Length: 353
Image (cartoon, rainbow, N blue to C red):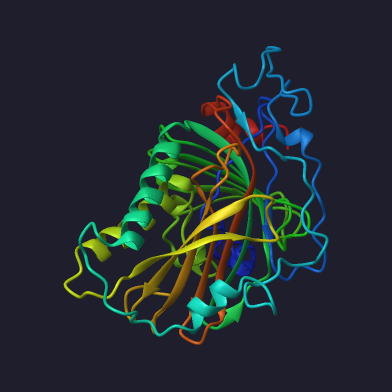
């Protein structure tokens, strides 16, 4: 594989931060989602993305079992079409989430709060983290659509729409760019401990040379050129770990100003359920892509009836000038659909193409 081919293929960005998903028919992968500056987001046909025989409308599994009895859980509205707008409204939009706007207007150093259990905000954040971890512990594998937009070095990248499939053991990822994404049709497979820990890539219609198979390290400069995070940092497990790091840093801080603060319950136009929202203050120098610091909002699903309950399905980040630099939204979640090694085997997935 020539260096020039890799350079051409990867100029439009490769990977999102925090995906997971699947397609059950042996040898046929999943499709996936994203959101941002694309002229139009085309709604994918959801049925081919699901395991063979899994009927969301009837609530039955491939063996004709009730989905819940079969140990699967499906989002209450997996077939809900995406917003009709070409991009998801920013929390900075007029009249939208005034609480979030107020928090953004606060100075980075909030009024000192106690580090003891008497701190209701910090105690609430700990409860949210514990629930998220427990919910994820019950998920062995899952399919999810990811909408992503990012800013890197001051440049706003095109909005992505991807469908991702994940499993925990071994950590495995399959991603495919959907219609409406700049790299529509591109597929990426990563399995920890296999393929020399290299990403297996099949270029899509949105790439200059479609149908080419490449191999690339997740940490290589070309893989990270247009992505704020690597593929081995994606998925709910990794997202929750990053939240845990932020919480632990706050609990162990020698200062009295909280780095993570419970904002309250808010609604967003992306979803029908409410979110428990946590604000993270990021000091200068702590993160590579936020050299001057910023603020990150973690949105955890607060609806006990939803498949996403307790999980951080939306994350937005703003720099020191309150400009959005990260937007990650997960929807159409289907969990515990028995993904196996065949679903992450590029030789099998791409054998007939």
